[in-house]
Length: 204
Image (cartoon, rainbow, N blue to C red):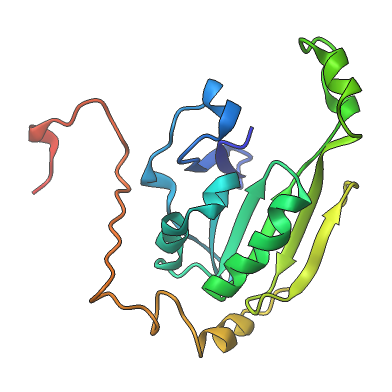
């Protein structure tokens, strides 16, 4: 469910933007590991947009790969829990001096399918919300634009001023003037992974 970031283009077609690098816990029963091909940013008005899935947001090198491409609006997708979004949303914002939107879902006991094996035990031992949301938006100074919102479905709307990114990066830009490429070197392989590489198909 949270293995890929996707978007719908102007033709209504679903396009994958980023495949999750590492499936978490029982996701491994369904999803294999992704590759670095989706560690890319995308232009969105004045912003440079990037995103990661779930616990990928805790991976500092994955975040740095996006920062180095000029990301200043980060979308963190979560299955839905304030305990996931409350701290890291502001942390990523302060670290990158970017706007960060954490997008989370809700899951109630009533959302579980009746044919799920052991459903009676699950319902008996679960709170009303198995995933309580926690969607929120932080500014590049780490202050809330929208505080974590829980336990209700709602469309949250915020106006983001891109100049706030420049104001905050004036004193700290982690992959700009404050970086030390003479000391630190991050190499990111964005090639699609494949079983075989044929020498006659390689470009010079």
